[in-house]
Length: 344
Image (cartoon, rainbow, N blue to C red):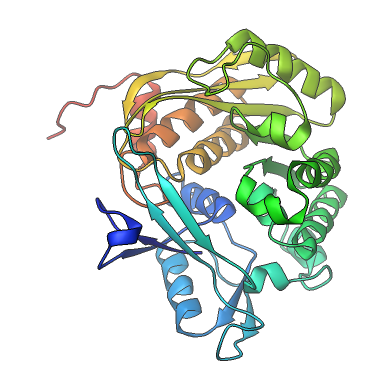
Protein backbone atom coordinates (compact mmCIF):
# COMPACT_ATOMS: atom_id res chain seq x y z
CA UNK A 1 0.00 0.00 0.00
CA UNK A 2 0.96 3.64 -0.34
CA UNK A 3 1.32 5.18 3.11
CA UNK A 4 0.55 8.88 3.36
CA UNK A 5 2.09 10.33 6.52
CA UNK A 6 1.31 13.82 7.92
CA UNK A 7 4.55 13.77 9.92
CA UNK A 8 4.10 15.43 13.31
CA UNK A 9 0.60 16.58 12.36
CA UNK A 10 -2.75 14.84 12.09
CA UNK A 11 -4.57 13.35 9.12
CA UNK A 12 -7.68 15.44 9.56
CA UNK A 13 -5.81 18.77 9.54
CA UNK A 14 -2.94 17.95 7.16
CA UNK A 15 -2.09 20.05 4.11
CA UNK A 16 0.77 17.84 2.98
CA UNK A 17 1.77 14.19 3.33
CA UNK A 18 5.00 12.27 2.91
CA UNK A 19 4.69 9.12 0.80
CA UNK A 20 6.09 5.75 1.89
CA UNK A 21 5.40 2.19 0.85
CA UNK A 22 4.28 -0.34 3.42
CA UNK A 23 2.43 -3.56 4.10
CA UNK A 24 2.62 -6.41 6.60
CA UNK A 25 4.40 -8.92 4.36
CA UNK A 26 6.31 -6.39 2.27
CA UNK A 27 7.84 -4.74 5.35
CA UNK A 28 9.33 -8.10 6.34
CA UNK A 29 10.74 -8.73 2.85
CA UNK A 30 12.25 -5.25 2.72
CA UNK A 31 13.81 -5.59 6.18
CA UNK A 32 15.37 -8.92 5.23
CA UNK A 33 16.81 -7.36 2.07
CA UNK A 34 17.94 -3.95 3.26
CA UNK A 35 19.06 -4.70 6.81
CA UNK A 36 20.02 -8.36 6.63
CA UNK A 37 21.23 -8.65 3.03
CA UNK A 38 19.00 -11.54 1.98
CA UNK A 39 17.44 -11.83 -1.49
CA UNK A 40 13.69 -11.32 -1.31
CA UNK A 41 10.72 -10.85 -3.63
CA UNK A 42 7.14 -9.73 -3.15
CA UNK A 43 4.18 -11.60 -4.62
CA UNK A 44 1.39 -9.07 -5.07
CA UNK A 45 -0.71 -7.21 -7.64
CA UNK A 46 -0.93 -3.55 -8.62
CA UNK A 47 -3.37 -1.63 -10.75
CA UNK A 48 -1.42 -0.41 -13.75
CA UNK A 49 -1.49 3.37 -13.31
CA UNK A 50 0.77 6.10 -11.99
CA UNK A 51 0.18 5.17 -8.34
CA UNK A 52 1.06 1.57 -9.16
CA UNK A 53 4.26 2.73 -10.85
CA UNK A 54 5.10 4.82 -7.77
CA UNK A 55 4.64 1.76 -5.57
CA UNK A 56 6.87 -0.27 -7.88
CA UNK A 57 9.55 2.41 -7.72
CA UNK A 58 9.44 2.44 -3.91
CA UNK A 59 9.71 -1.35 -3.83
CA UNK A 60 12.70 -1.19 -6.17
CA UNK A 61 14.35 1.37 -3.88
CA UNK A 62 13.88 -1.16 -1.09
CA UNK A 63 15.88 -3.73 -3.08
CA UNK A 64 12.99 -6.21 -3.21
CA UNK A 65 12.52 -8.17 -6.46
CA UNK A 66 9.44 -7.02 -8.40
CA UNK A 67 9.37 -9.73 -11.07
CA UNK A 68 6.51 -11.62 -9.40
CA UNK A 69 4.19 -8.60 -9.25
CA UNK A 70 1.02 -9.07 -11.31
CA UNK A 71 -0.11 -5.95 -13.17
CA UNK A 72 -3.87 -5.53 -13.61
CA UNK A 73 -5.46 -3.23 -16.19
CA UNK A 74 -6.81 -0.06 -14.58
CA UNK A 75 -10.39 0.91 -15.49
CA UNK A 76 -9.80 4.66 -15.12
CA UNK A 77 -11.91 5.15 -12.02
CA UNK A 78 -11.14 2.36 -9.55
CA UNK A 79 -14.54 0.77 -9.93
CA UNK A 80 -13.07 -2.68 -10.53
CA UNK A 81 -9.46 -2.43 -9.42
CA UNK A 82 -7.23 0.10 -7.68
CA UNK A 83 -4.16 0.51 -5.47
CA UNK A 84 -4.51 0.72 -1.71
CA UNK A 85 -3.76 3.84 0.35
CA UNK A 86 -3.06 3.97 4.06
CA UNK A 87 -3.18 7.29 5.94
CA UNK A 88 -1.19 6.93 9.16
CA UNK A 89 -0.39 9.41 11.93
CA UNK A 90 2.27 8.47 14.45
CA UNK A 91 0.72 9.63 17.70
CA UNK A 92 2.56 11.31 20.55
CA UNK A 93 2.36 11.05 24.33
CA UNK A 94 -1.26 10.52 25.38
CA UNK A 95 -2.44 10.56 21.72
CA UNK A 96 -2.13 7.11 20.16
CA UNK A 97 -1.20 6.36 16.57
CA UNK A 98 -4.10 6.33 14.09
CA UNK A 99 -4.44 4.49 10.81
CA UNK A 100 -7.13 5.06 8.19
CA UNK A 101 -6.91 2.53 5.37
CA UNK A 102 -8.52 2.87 1.96
CA UNK A 103 -8.08 -0.54 0.37
CA UNK A 104 -11.41 -1.59 -1.12
CA UNK A 105 -11.18 -3.24 -4.58
CA UNK A 106 -7.38 -3.32 -4.46
CA UNK A 107 -5.72 -5.35 -7.18
CA UNK A 108 -4.34 -7.91 -4.75
CA UNK A 109 -7.72 -8.44 -3.06
CA UNK A 110 -9.16 -9.39 -6.46
CA UNK A 111 -6.61 -12.13 -7.12
CA UNK A 112 -8.13 -15.63 -7.16
CA UNK A 113 -6.57 -19.06 -6.64
CA UNK A 114 -4.70 -20.20 -9.72
CA UNK A 115 -3.46 -16.76 -10.77
CA UNK A 116 0.01 -17.13 -9.23
CA UNK A 117 2.24 -20.00 -10.37
CA UNK A 118 3.30 -21.42 -7.01
CA UNK A 119 4.98 -24.42 -8.65
CA UNK A 120 7.28 -22.00 -10.45
CA UNK A 121 7.92 -19.95 -7.31
CA UNK A 122 8.62 -22.82 -4.92
CA UNK A 123 9.75 -25.42 -7.44
CA UNK A 124 11.68 -23.76 -10.28
CA UNK A 125 12.89 -20.74 -8.30
CA UNK A 126 13.44 -22.77 -5.14
CA UNK A 127 12.16 -20.14 -2.70
CA UNK A 128 13.27 -21.24 0.78
CA UNK A 129 10.89 -19.23 2.94
CA UNK A 130 7.36 -17.87 2.51
CA UNK A 131 6.10 -15.16 4.85
CA UNK A 132 2.48 -14.12 4.84
CA UNK A 133 -0.13 -13.04 7.35
CA UNK A 134 -3.58 -12.22 8.62
CA UNK A 135 -3.91 -8.79 7.03
CA UNK A 136 -3.82 -10.17 3.50
CA UNK A 137 -5.99 -13.14 4.51
CA UNK A 138 -8.70 -10.70 5.65
CA UNK A 139 -8.90 -8.56 2.50
CA UNK A 140 -11.48 -10.72 0.73
CA UNK A 141 -12.84 -14.24 0.43
CA UNK A 142 -10.45 -14.58 -2.50
CA UNK A 143 -7.49 -13.58 -0.36
CA UNK A 144 -8.06 -16.24 2.27
CA UNK A 145 -8.31 -18.87 -0.48
CA UNK A 146 -5.09 -17.61 -2.15
CA UNK A 147 -3.18 -17.77 1.15
CA UNK A 148 -4.34 -21.34 1.74
CA UNK A 149 -3.31 -22.25 -1.82
CA UNK A 150 0.12 -20.66 -1.28
CA UNK A 151 0.90 -22.35 2.04
CA UNK A 152 -0.21 -25.75 0.74
CA UNK A 153 2.09 -25.35 -2.28
CA UNK A 154 4.96 -24.24 -0.03
CA UNK A 155 4.59 -27.36 2.11
CA UNK A 156 4.65 -29.54 -1.02
CA UNK A 157 8.11 -28.20 -1.87
CA UNK A 158 9.47 -28.14 1.68
CA UNK A 159 9.46 -24.33 1.87
CA UNK A 160 9.36 -22.96 5.42
CA UNK A 161 6.17 -20.98 6.12
CA UNK A 162 5.98 -18.14 8.63
CA UNK A 163 2.70 -16.40 9.38
CA UNK A 164 2.01 -13.21 11.32
CA UNK A 165 -1.51 -13.30 12.76
CA UNK A 166 -1.67 -9.46 12.64
CA UNK A 167 -5.29 -9.18 13.81
CA UNK A 168 -7.01 -5.99 12.66
CA UNK A 169 -10.65 -5.77 13.83
CA UNK A 170 -11.51 -3.23 11.12
CA UNK A 171 -10.66 -5.76 8.39
CA UNK A 172 -12.84 -8.53 9.79
CA UNK A 173 -15.84 -6.58 11.13
CA UNK A 174 -17.91 -6.65 7.94
CA UNK A 175 -17.03 -10.21 6.88
CA UNK A 176 -17.89 -12.13 10.01
CA UNK A 177 -15.80 -10.51 12.72
CA UNK A 178 -13.72 -12.49 15.19
CA UNK A 179 -15.59 -15.73 14.41
CA UNK A 180 -14.58 -15.52 10.74
CA UNK A 181 -11.01 -14.53 11.68
CA UNK A 182 -10.69 -17.65 13.80
CA UNK A 183 -12.21 -19.87 11.12
CA UNK A 184 -9.69 -18.67 8.51
CA UNK A 185 -6.65 -18.56 10.78
CA UNK A 186 -7.28 -21.96 12.37
CA UNK A 187 -7.30 -23.50 8.90
CA UNK A 188 -4.14 -21.66 7.83
CA UNK A 189 -2.35 -22.55 11.06
CA UNK A 190 -2.23 -26.22 10.01
CA UNK A 191 0.40 -25.36 7.39
CA UNK A 192 2.58 -22.94 9.39
CA UNK A 193 6.09 -23.65 10.71
CA UNK A 194 6.78 -20.32 12.42
CA UNK A 195 3.80 -18.54 13.99
CA UNK A 196 4.14 -14.90 15.03
CA UNK A 197 1.74 -12.70 16.95
CA UNK A 198 1.44 -9.97 19.55
CA UNK A 199 -0.40 -9.83 22.89
CA UNK A 200 -3.89 -9.95 21.38
CA UNK A 201 -3.41 -11.99 18.20
CA UNK A 202 -3.41 -15.51 19.65
CA UNK A 203 -6.66 -14.81 21.48
CA UNK A 204 -8.47 -13.05 18.63
CA UNK A 205 -7.26 -15.29 15.78
CA UNK A 206 -6.84 -18.72 17.36
CA UNK A 207 -9.01 -18.52 20.47
CA UNK A 208 -6.30 -19.01 23.10
CA UNK A 209 -6.80 -17.07 26.33
CA UNK A 210 -3.91 -15.57 28.30
CA UNK A 211 -4.37 -15.65 32.04
CA UNK A 212 -3.60 -12.66 34.21
CA UNK A 213 -3.54 -9.80 31.69
CA UNK A 214 -5.61 -6.74 32.50
CA UNK A 215 -8.14 -5.61 29.88
CA UNK A 216 -6.05 -2.61 28.77
CA UNK A 217 -2.80 -4.65 28.58
CA UNK A 218 -1.06 -2.14 30.85
CA UNK A 219 0.51 -5.04 32.73
CA UNK A 220 1.49 -8.29 31.02
CA UNK A 221 1.50 -11.64 32.81
CA UNK A 222 4.52 -13.50 31.41
CA UNK A 223 3.60 -16.78 33.12
CA UNK A 224 0.24 -16.58 31.34
CA UNK A 225 1.98 -16.20 28.00
CA UNK A 226 4.24 -19.17 28.64
CA UNK A 227 1.25 -21.35 29.56
CA UNK A 228 -0.61 -20.17 26.47
CA UNK A 229 2.34 -20.99 24.19
CA UNK A 230 2.40 -24.54 25.52
CA UNK A 231 -1.32 -24.87 24.74
CA UNK A 232 -0.77 -23.54 21.22
CA UNK A 233 2.00 -26.09 20.57
CA UNK A 234 -0.20 -28.91 21.82
CA UNK A 235 -2.99 -27.83 19.45
CA UNK A 236 -0.65 -27.28 16.48
CA UNK A 237 2.31 -29.69 16.70
CA UNK A 238 3.39 -28.53 13.23
CA UNK A 239 4.63 -25.23 14.75
CA UNK A 240 8.41 -25.38 15.01
CA UNK A 241 8.65 -21.89 16.50
CA UNK A 242 6.13 -19.54 18.10
CA UNK A 243 7.14 -15.94 18.71
CA UNK A 244 5.18 -13.20 20.40
CA UNK A 245 6.12 -9.57 20.90
CA UNK A 246 5.33 -8.08 24.31
CA UNK A 247 4.59 -4.37 24.26
CA UNK A 248 3.50 -2.46 27.36
CA UNK A 249 2.17 0.90 26.18
CA UNK A 250 2.87 3.61 28.72
CA UNK A 251 2.31 6.38 26.20
CA UNK A 252 2.38 6.48 22.40
CA UNK A 253 6.04 7.43 22.62
CA UNK A 254 7.18 5.31 25.61
CA UNK A 255 6.74 1.53 25.46
CA UNK A 256 8.36 -1.40 27.21
CA UNK A 257 9.38 -3.75 24.40
CA UNK A 258 10.53 -7.38 24.44
CA UNK A 259 9.56 -10.78 23.04
CA UNK A 260 9.26 -14.49 23.76
CA UNK A 261 10.15 -17.37 21.49
CA UNK A 262 8.95 -20.93 22.09
CA UNK A 263 10.83 -23.76 20.37
CA UNK A 264 11.46 -27.44 21.15
CA UNK A 265 9.55 -27.14 24.40
CA UNK A 266 11.71 -24.29 25.69
CA UNK A 267 10.97 -20.61 26.20
CA UNK A 268 13.55 -18.06 25.07
CA UNK A 269 13.30 -14.54 26.48
CA UNK A 270 14.67 -11.72 24.36
CA UNK A 271 16.81 -8.85 25.50
CA UNK A 272 14.54 -6.12 26.87
CA UNK A 273 13.99 -2.47 26.01
CA UNK A 274 12.20 -0.92 29.00
CA UNK A 275 10.98 2.61 28.42
CA UNK A 276 11.80 2.48 24.70
CA UNK A 277 11.37 5.91 23.12
CA UNK A 278 9.39 5.63 19.90
CA UNK A 279 9.20 7.93 16.90
CA UNK A 280 6.89 5.78 14.75
CA UNK A 281 5.62 2.43 16.03
CA UNK A 282 4.02 1.28 12.76
CA UNK A 283 6.00 -1.61 11.28
CA UNK A 284 7.78 -2.49 14.53
CA UNK A 285 6.22 -5.93 14.58
CA UNK A 286 7.12 -6.54 10.94
CA UNK A 287 10.73 -5.59 11.67
CA UNK A 288 10.67 -8.01 14.60
CA UNK A 289 9.52 -10.72 12.17
CA UNK A 290 12.32 -10.03 9.68
CA UNK A 291 14.97 -10.15 12.42
CA UNK A 292 13.51 -13.37 13.78
CA UNK A 293 13.47 -14.97 10.31
CA UNK A 294 17.06 -13.87 9.67
CA UNK A 295 18.20 -15.39 12.96
CA UNK A 296 16.41 -18.68 12.31
CA UNK A 297 17.67 -18.98 8.72
CA UNK A 298 21.23 -17.95 9.47
CA UNK A 299 21.90 -19.52 12.87
CA UNK A 300 19.05 -22.02 13.48
CA UNK A 301 19.16 -20.61 17.01
CA UNK A 302 15.93 -19.49 18.70
CA UNK A 303 17.70 -17.34 21.29
CA UNK A 304 19.68 -15.44 18.69
CA UNK A 305 16.62 -15.16 16.47
CA UNK A 306 14.39 -13.57 19.12
CA UNK A 307 17.18 -11.15 20.07
CA UNK A 308 17.73 -10.11 16.45
CA UNK A 309 14.00 -9.68 16.06
CA UNK A 310 13.41 -7.50 19.10
CA UNK A 311 16.51 -5.37 18.45
CA UNK A 312 15.54 -4.79 14.83
CA UNK A 313 11.97 -3.93 15.83
CA UNK A 314 13.22 -1.46 18.43
CA UNK A 315 15.50 0.28 15.93
CA UNK A 316 12.75 0.43 13.29
CA UNK A 317 10.50 2.31 15.71
CA UNK A 318 13.09 5.09 16.07
CA UNK A 319 12.67 6.18 12.43
CA UNK A 320 9.61 7.29 10.39
CA UNK A 321 7.74 5.08 7.96
CA UNK A 322 6.62 1.45 8.00
CA UNK A 323 9.97 0.05 6.98
CA UNK A 324 13.31 -0.29 8.74
CA UNK A 325 16.26 2.03 8.18
CA UNK A 326 18.55 -0.04 10.45
CA UNK A 327 21.73 -1.83 9.40
CA UNK A 328 22.88 -5.30 10.43
CA UNK A 329 25.80 -3.68 12.26
CA UNK A 330 23.37 -1.58 14.32
CA UNK A 331 21.18 -4.57 15.12
CA UNK A 332 24.15 -6.67 16.22
CA UNK A 333 25.41 -3.80 18.37
CA UNK A 334 22.05 -3.64 20.17
CA UNK A 335 21.99 -7.42 20.58
CA UNK A 336 25.43 -7.18 22.18
CA UNK A 337 24.43 -4.40 24.55
CA UNK A 338 25.82 -1.29 22.84
CA UNK A 339 24.72 2.13 24.10
CA UNK A 340 23.21 5.05 22.18
CA UNK A 341 26.34 7.19 22.49
CA UNK A 342 27.42 9.23 19.49
CA UNK A 343 29.47 7.27 16.96
CA UNK A 344 32.27 9.24 15.34
